[in-house]
Image 1 (tube, rainbow, N blue to C red):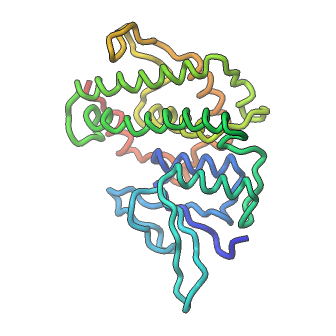
Image 2 (image 1 turned 90 degrees about the horizontal axis):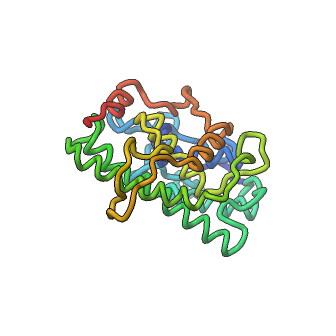
Image 3 (image 1 turned 120 degrees about the vertical axis):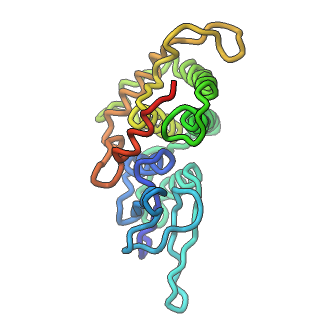
Length: 267
């Protein structure tokens, strides 16, 4: 077991760190093993609480792993990027190393085919979160450049990806994913839920619904779907899980000023 807790530097309510905190809860990794260090929003100083070592340079989240003390100097090794952190921790849990709780099942997939399917969905889910940046940058009060038409066009491309996932979920039954059910999420589903939750909670956009009116898809090859019933089923099931509850005391809810900016749409 690690002699000192590992430190996860994170903006608690923001999307990429939020993935990892949901993952930690799903895996049952206690704060005594991985302590979440709540870094203040960039506009509010971008600093870690004084009780912790200074925030490492780079985009958050960052996992800081204590090295053996040398000459009394505290040093750390770092794992950066949310997906890398989750994959690294999942390998440790699968092997039961460093005192981490042994996995009930691998969130990355139990065999080559299931791992390929999880990776494929995770690529799509990660793409959604990354592609949201131009939507909000050009189309909301949280952005830096008001180009509403560009925002709307980028949103159409997100709907293309959502439609792809809807097709992948066509034969899935998510009843067991509800809290207390017999179906735990895989890593890709955590990433997907985080996107759907973030856009709804912070930007007021329910992305389980399609465009408000019928329109051609981005390639003009046919009508885009106007609703995603399987995505909605997935979201409702995952939202019921204890891991998905936002802890306002821990800073997992955006502040009033940030919410007002994010929910001010320019179109």
